[in-house]
Length: 266
Ligand SMILES: N[C@@H](CCC[C@H](N)C(=O)O)C(=O)O
Image (tube, rainbow, N blue to C red; front, side):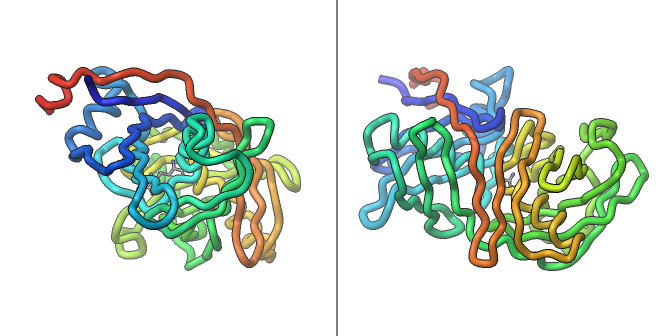
C-alpha cells in the first residue's frame, strides 16, 4: 500500500493533496520538492497535507514547491475544502478549518465554488519591486502571509516574471509574494504574481486579496470588492474592515497512490 494522493487546483494554482488524518506522514522538505517537481514528481505549486488534530477542526498543512512552509494559501484552502466535502468528512455549507494563520471560516457552495474568509487584509506600508531594471511602487499587505501588491499602468502581460522581482529584504525579512496589477475598470482587476517559494504561478488567492487591498488603498478606500482575472481564471474578492473573502472554483481531478519504495527512498 503506497502513499495516497490527490491532485487539484484552484484557478490553476495546483496542489498535491496528501490525506494524513493521523498525522503519520514524514513530509520532509525533500519529499515536498520532489513531489512538486514537474519532471521528477507529480508536479505542483504546493502540497496540502490534510490532518485531523485531536482537538479542533481539520488542519491544512501547506508547503510551497521549494519545501518551505507558508502561513496561508487562499487557493489551497478552496481545494482543501473541496477534498473534505467530496470525501464526506465535513458536510457542504459553512464550517471552520485550521491553518498556520489561525482558524478560517469557509463556505462550500452548491455550485462547487468555495468562499474563504481570509481574515483582515492589513496594509502595513509601501515598498518597491523591480523587474528588468524598472521599479514598481507597491503596497505591503499582510493576508496571513506577506505580499507586495503593485498597481501599475504597464500591461502585466509584458512583464518578465521568470526572474524573481527584486524587493527590499529589510521590509520583507522572510521573503514576499509580489503581485502586479492592472485596473481594467472600476471593480475589475488583472493580476500576475511571483510567489515566494514557488515562482510565477497562474493564480494566488491571498495575492488577489492583496491586489484588491492595494487598489482600494491607492484610491483612498479601505473596503470594496473586485473580480480579479489571473492567468488561470477569475476569482471574486470582498475586502471589509473585519475581514476579506475570496470566492472561486476548486477542482480535484485525479487520485492515486505514490509508490512506497519511491517515497521511502526520498
Ligand atoms: N498560492 C497561495 C499562496 C501560497 C503561499 C505563498 N507562496 C507564500 O509563501 O506565502 C494562495 O493561493 O494564496
